Amino acid sequence: MADDTAHLDGNCLAGPLSEILAVEATTAWWRCPECARSGPLAELHVFGPDPGLTARCPGCAYVALRLVREGEYVWLTLGSGTGAFRFRAVTS
Ligand SMILES: [Zn+2]
Image 1: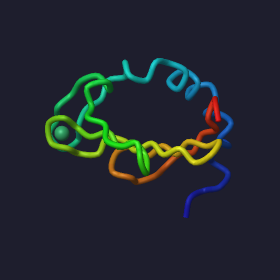
Image 2 (image 1 turned 60 degrees about the vertical axis):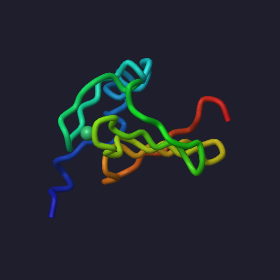
Image 3 (image 1 turned 135 degrees about the vertical axis):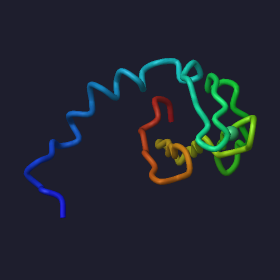
Image 4 (image 1 turned 90 degrees about the horizontal axis):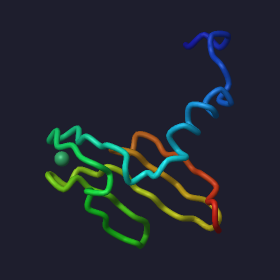
């Protein structure tokens, strides 16, 4: 079991995440864990819009990310779906 006294709360992520989430996302660099192809996010092949947007590697179709809009929220799944983050949309 993890030592509960050896962690910080999630508020400490606000600064570091603001550095990466406040940029033009399509200029982010992406590397495929399956085929090792790399390039800007803008080169991914995107399918959708329903039930959400799915971005796949142009080399091997590995799912790079999924983005689903649910009312005022946006769910973001990165990679193979080991977790997801929900953000309040700027415009709803
Ligand atoms: Zn790939």
